[in-house]
Every structure is written in C-alpha cells, then in structure tokens.
Image (cartoon, rainbow, N blue to C red):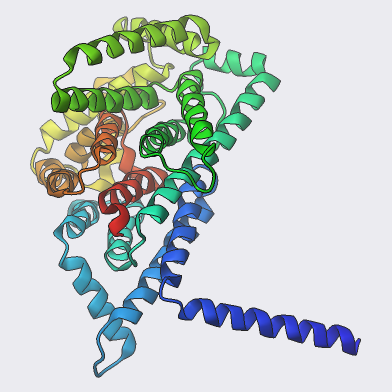
Length: 438
C-alpha cells in the first residue's frame, strides 16, 4: 500500500509540475484556444452541451490572455481585466458591430408582451457579445494553428458523413419512405445546419488543398483531395436543398472572382456547364436527391392549388408571406421579437386558415427581422452583417465565399435564431476574418 501511495503521489506531483510548466509558456493560451475551438466546431454537429461548454472555455482562455497582457495598475484585478478586455473589443469596430445583433432583439423587449419568448431570443443571441469579446482578446494563433482547425473540421465531417451513409444503407427502405413524405435523411442534430457544416467543410478542405497544407506527411494532401470530393458528393447524397444552394453559390462566386482576376471567362463557363451536368447526373442517379427533387415539384404543385397545408415547402412559402404581412402592419419597429409567434398565428388564422394547425415563423432571416423588429431592426442588423465584409483586409477568398453561403442561407432560413445557426455563422465569420492574426 505504501508503494502504491508513493507512486500516486509521484505521478500527481509530476502532473502538477507539467501543468505549471505549460501554463507559464508564452504560447499556452494559443494551444488552449486551438483545442477549444476544435471542440466547438465538432460539437456544432453533435452536442449542444459541448458547444456551450467550448464557447465558455474560449471565454476563459481570452480572460487568461487579457490578464497576462493588461498593464499594471491599482484597484481590483478583476475590474482591471474587464476594463482592459472590453477596451480591446471597442477598439476593433469590425468586432464591436456584432453587438448590434444582440441589441436588436434586446431592445424590442420594450414593445414585446411575451417576456418568455423574448428572453429566449436574447439568450440565443448572447454569443454576439461573448465571441467577439473573446476574439478581441485571444492570443495570436499563427497561420498553422489557424489552418489546423479547418483541417480537423474536414476530417470530423468525413467521419460523421460516413456514419450517415452507413445508417442510410442499414435502414434504406424506412428512410426513403420518410423522404417521400418530405422528411429529411437522419443526421446528427439539425439536417439544415448539418448540410451547411458539410458545405463549409468542402470550402475549407478545397482551400487547404489549394494552399498545400499538410499536418505531417506529404501524402495527406492526396487524402485531403479525396475527402473534399467525398464531402462534395455527400452534399448531393444528403439532398438538403438549402445546403446545396449555399455550396453552389459559394463555388459560383469563387469561379467568377477567379475569372475576373485572370480574365479567363471561357474556362469558368466550361466549368459551370460541367457543374450543371454533374448536378443533373446526381439528380438522375442518387435516389435521395431524385426523391427530394420530385417531392419539391409535387409540393410546389400542391401550393399552387392551395392544397399544401401538410407539406413542408408550402408551409415555408406561406411563412414568408405571413412575415411580409406582419411587417406591412408594423413597418418601423415590428411586433417585437417576443410577440412574433403569437402574431404569426393570428395572421395565419386570418389570411391562411388552412395552415394555422402548423404555424411556422418566417423562413427568411430578413423577413424574420422585419416582422419582429421592423425596418429599424433590419437596418441595424444589415450593418452588423455587412460592415465586417467591407472592412475585411485579409485577402482570403474563403472569407467572402463563406459570406455568400451565409446570405443564401438567410434567404431560406432564420439562421441566427437558433443556437447552432448563431455559432456556425459567428464563429466561422470571426475565424476566417481574423485568419492567422488571431
């Protein structure tokens, strides 16, 4: 027993010494940041709890770095760290502007009656304060660590997507029947956000391949190329239209940008034609995508005949009409973020009674903002969306391509009204915007 006790004491002492040595290293916060950032992007698709934990660990890392860097002074150490860290945030307007996306729903509480739903909206938008503050104070990562996170994203998505494919073939009849009825293929968490993660991984992997990034071995670049092709094919197999639209829009932007810089429009036209052939072939050969296409056409026909009350696409189109009608009645301030569900139900009852049994909030981020917070809320939100794009000076095309994906997503979803959507948009925008300077 004495021997075991001495062994445990020795191991505990060595572990404590290792931790103390690591904490004293100048790049320790950067290592911690990379670890928690990887945890965040992986947990986006698998665990709300881990997503929240990773975000707050990033906050802790930023606080640690700010405490290291703050100048000496008098008064409470906590107060000095907070003052120094918020000073860093407000000196960077491309980060400060994101606070508007929290302020917009928060201020609508002044004219919202439903406090419960209003508080939920504010809670979901809280990362627009937390993450910009963290990124304003996090340590410099360097180019390699910055790219290593994207590398981990690609391979994490490859593993998840292989699991989805295996599950599909194990339960193919049941899944195809569900897709025939308009339900999505089973994936971790939300199918729309998952498809956007896949599209992001395709962009990130292609960019890393173009940059010739490898972790240790030269052959990894070939494996990365196959991973990108697999994820691109999987995006079609998954057959989530919003994810495919976002991916193709980003690729189109990159193609046009490349052609503009090199004046080689003919090459882009040939590639675009080839991409169209690929998509047409995927629709003809992939059963999941073929089924989704046929369902979309059928759903549109039902909507045109006012028979789409039980069909998902029809409900989404009606939700957009509902959001437009709500905004027309409350153009300047909207109905308040907290009262949007009640107003949606009332408008559906009055104008679309066939759809009132399954009310949907406006499936368009801009209409959602208009209905909930009016023109004022939309204008402030557009400032937050657009200012970082115009202020960006990093020169990396992947940042702009990601913003194109975000814009397409906003057209068909209320993306930043869910915790997963907020984390996807905000984290990758900040990560691509800061680059190796983070």
